Image (tube, rainbow, N blue to C red):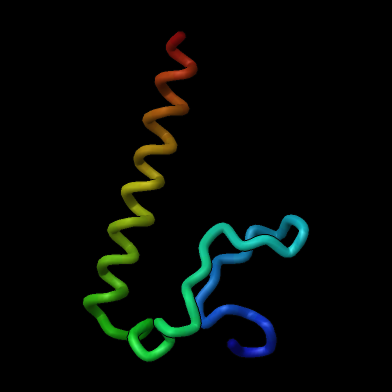
Length: 60
């Protein structure tokens, strides 16, 4: 951990909570292009899923 922050984190800004945080053990691979690609795919999927659900709820 660097200064109390996980190796990689996306800060939510609310009460010091993180929307996404990676375990310290992943620090050696966080700059590996393959790992970055996989994480990007996960974030893209979660984003798409969020908007699909939001749209579906608005259609009700």
